[in-house]
Length: 482
Image (cartoon, rainbow, N blue to C red; front, side):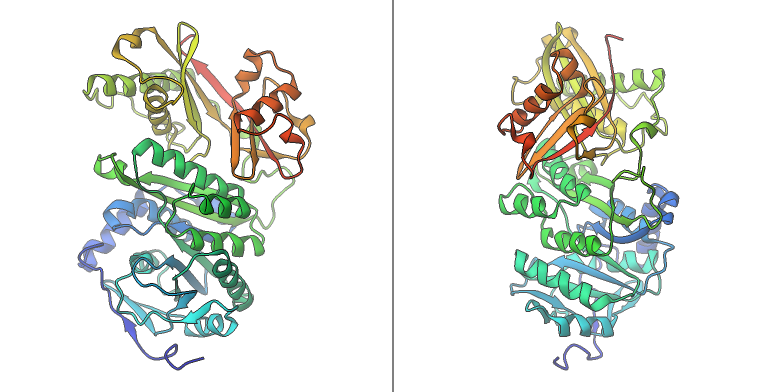
């Protein structure tokens, strides 16, 4: 180990005043405001939080989402936080550990856990190196420092910057972390934004697919998605390392805490950057009935008739706004249930025939926002149909399917036609069919499985393959015909 790693150096706050406030008071107030706006995670304190994914754009853009990740960690007892991020500016091979004595922000200095930093370099695994002399304005690490100071005051950290994010580097860094932390109480924070500069709807779809791999903790599928360019997260390697370390430490639940993109902040949806807060938990006393997402299929609260009418109204209003280019205003006040993150599909029918259907599987946004966004996408972005014309609106009826979380099954006998929808994944392909489709088409279980495989671009018999993963879900379905 070289003597650079342990020298008494403070890395300066190079991005203060540009990426975040240089004023300590303003910076602290902004983070505290974002944290106050974030959901309460009281129920999650019964679980061990092993790792988070948190974004690193300018704080005005991604700060609200980042606050959700750090709020989930607030109030817990950690010895150290390991922050892993990609190198946007410096080019080098491997993963570089900064071993100076601290990182500065307008709020003061966060000490570096130099002992753990030294262990990581000593473990090495052929990829972990000494590095980062502190003069490069790397936002992936620096943007997390003020959040640590406000949400985990007094906790030291180890900054790790990945120059390469190939499989060898990811596996080596994960192994070095696992080897080095022992029984320390360590939080892994993967610093990453998601898709970059796609149109709004394409970004939402791309990011939803990326988050689905994280939620299922499908590391191999995630790597394949990155290799094929289907996932555009700049910190994909950091995310993979966080998943790998969390799995090794007993992770049995992943939750998407928040999702947004720059278009939600600025209103410019022509080329957006995606942001997500994701948490990896271990249920130390989890029962047999606990699902991988922490809920039971029967335990999802039902919507009231008023909430259903309001959601249908939101869907129609969103399309009318796009057709008329006039904002109708927020005339509906969402209830607490409508504000909960839920996956949902919106189906448009014209004189009883399908006219568009698009949805989001993962519960990454409040339900009322998901319904609004998917209504617009179904009307204008379903590649099977031309964009909806103003003359068609009076002939369109809406159907909304609010989804329960996915549940992986091992035996297809568990599939109940009429109750379950199917989501089938093999390799980099995936297909979904809603519960009502099987009923409308009068399919039996086998046909339902085969048609879902075909929807994924697979052979109809692919559901029998050992490497195929089958998920079921239920849906609360309602529409304007009710």
